[in-house]
Amino acid sequence: MAEIDRTRWEARYASDARPAHAGANRWLAAQAAYLDMVASSSVAPLHALDIACGTGGSLEWLAQRGWHVTGVDISSTALAQARGRLEANGLLDRVTLIEADLDVWRPVEGYDLVTCFFFLDRRLWPALRAAVRPGGLICLSTYHTGRLVEHPETNPAHLLAPGELSALIKDWNWCLLAARTNDQIEAVFGRRAGDFWAGGNNQAS
Ligand SMILES: C[S@@+](CC[C@H](N)C(=O)[O-])C[C@H]1O[C@@H](n2cnc3c(N)ncnc32)[C@H](O)[C@@H]1O
Image (tube, rainbow, N blue to C red):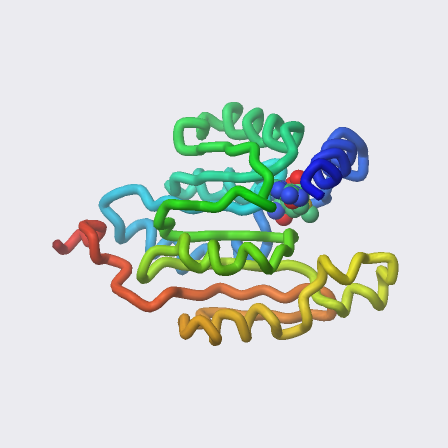
């Protein structure tokens, strides 16, 4: 499975069929006001994890806003492109890039923010939940089955049921800060229960 993923994505990133979203994920960018408020209220730099980061558009966007970021992807070509753009913008010191297979790789740290865009593996969800520290944030977005109307060739295993991400956040008993579903894409922005400022990040403490 992983070797098939690697080969397929390496071929895509080396060709014109590379994923179109070179910049930050739009749903992430829509949360800018909240994320900037959180980051500006923190003494220490906050740390985000981007799962299946591709060429690093969201990593770059977060790093430009002061976040320290870790990106994980199976494609060395995508990660090399990410490294190039981050280096060109003087952001490499804030970024860790990990080439790993998400079939087996799991985060161990407590992150302030976990993001995952256009990559679906439900087996990862418990690990993503655990990776967010108390009071921390999660931002997810990918296609749901509505995509089949325009793209019937899409593998249904890569598609959410509409409303599935919102149901997931509620099932975890987390606060659903924002959610959106259009004809193809579902997106959520949630916060784990707990005091975000516990542990020395509160400027007032
Ligand atoms: C559709 S792209 C999304 C990239 C990025 N998140 C974005 O929204 O632009 C899916 C990404 O998942 C990565 N990927 C696919 N299978 C993987 C696996 N088993 N382990 C790690 N990354 C994988 C691919 O290399 C690719 O970068």
